[in-house]
Image 1 (spheres, helix red, strand yellow):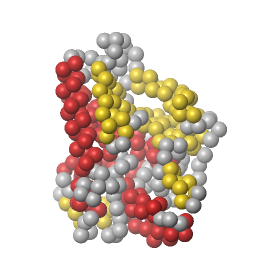
Image 2 (cartoon, one colour):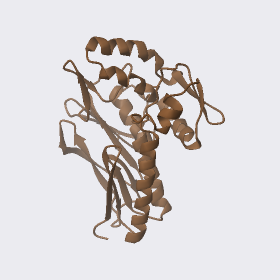
Image 3 (cartoon, helix red, strand yellow):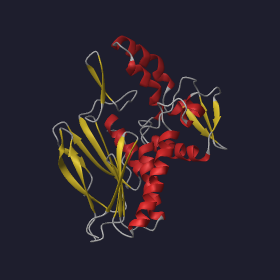
Image 4 (cartoon, helix red, strand yellow):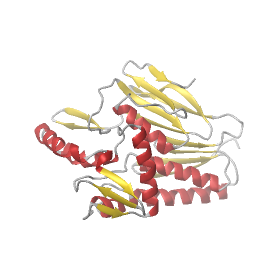
Length: 291
């Protein structure tokens, strides 16, 4: 097959692309339709900004300190908690608690809000219990899965591709990537790591086979309060680093996303043996373990 079957839709505010390199078009299209349906369902279910979403109605609008979750949500949070612990709590899904602080009109209001709510965040503020229960220490603590649900969706899409017997494909949701096999010509999928100062330029190209990749970067999005810019990547005590982007390669897009976000907040994180890391600093120097 010279050209792959190409499918695209928009979800979670980003283009979601599936390219299939083998099998029939009919099989690829049926697989794509299921991926699209599943992705839209995840987007709706875990939308932090929709008051009627499952995430908000069940967790963030809770009336008790202990809530029973459905099986899928519990399993997702189990994975996230393990990964969060591995980053020493740098990755934190309770940062949604602080989002309201960045909507304040003045720095004084914003900083007062952060001071009041920061103690209500972190791994110690929530825990998972048996029988699919989640518990919270504080009523103010909010869970935001915006930093992981797209990556989880990519993993689920790749799983669906394999279920359809497809041996060669690439799933790319806004730069969150999971490859299935390699190209039919035997070559691996080549993915460029962007220059954070000029995203149209690649600093290095990595080759992937049955692997995932994500990149977090300070240039992507930010908010401004009284002309002071805040990165969209929120942390309670972010380390002052000169890292402009963090690219991670691993066996799951979810794992990649957790670590790429975490490295933007702190470089003092242990790197597991199965993780490949490319950090780009302010001088565009690469700090990597690709070799």
